[in-house]
Image (tube, rainbow, N blue to C red; front, side, top):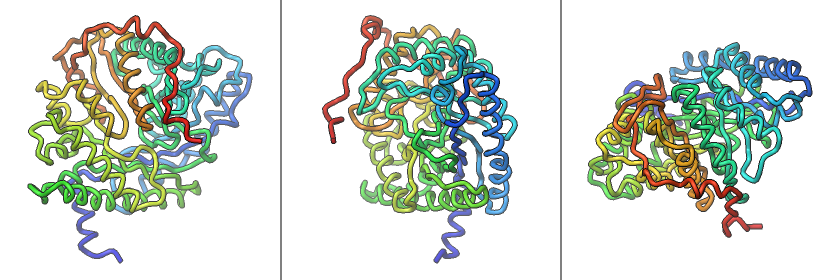
Length: 449
């Protein structure tokens, strides 16, 4: 039975500690939308998205109003366009991105994910065409998010794709003044049910249509840890677990209700501590509450490992439908504490890379100098993919080489994307390494059958 105290605690979490449903994301299959004719294919895509997601935003707003639970974003993810549209007899995939953007605007969602390709073991014709279109597609749209999976524990790392994506990131930055790179993610071990942008897509093993919910509450966890100052780490872990349990239960409630009202199956709750630039909604603050003078100090990776594991344990106890990424995100520009530490020189890219070994995803929303080479971007992607491949976890890179800016400058992306100081990159060249191409073989731990 839910007690009065538990109700009051939840109200306090929402009103004072930034607890919210970060996103209700509807996944929609486009596998039946392929057609050789470009106009017909685009028409089928637009019609299906607008038909399936017609009531998504209104339903989210109704639940938000009736339950008093903030739902920050309503979003759509679709089957990777490289798969869904490969049968179309066109070499230009930009019109598909424009169609997604039109559909997203029509149904009122803030982002639509799935301008994506899965190339961990090699390219198909559709994969090539989609990747070639990414810079122009992101320059021509406002709501479209793109992702490319270049590696996996079972397949290894497609280094040809890694080299290509370094050039794509640079070209996107040039065409969009860096803004488009905030909507572009390069993955290793991408998951099929991730509700969070920019990496969301509707996996080929997913149903026709599904509702996934992403819950976030860094401020809630930070507040809870303030009550156990000086306590040993097992008490810290238990406190995070109990808090994650309560947060996940709220997500389960919203997901079940949205599923019922929309007549769409409930997929997963993703309990990821996704920060915002708002003060008091920071993963960095949680790590510093554990006793670090600043995020980035020695001990940061250990603290993050504890946090990530405890979040997952608490979430799994609260729902049998926990999925997505579920853990702690460390996007620099979207976390006030990370911004503060990076600006002070206490948080470096090298330390962030170490932290990605134990967080939910990877190097996220990091502003780089505008003169960073494509080969250096590719090498950063390769390093992250290697961490994901060896450790059998999802890793990703979302970096923004900002044209015209240098180390110490600041770039403002606006809204939830926040702002970030431009961070220094090791100047040593990886050009010859990236030019080798081919595929880094899968590790021995991939042989599990």
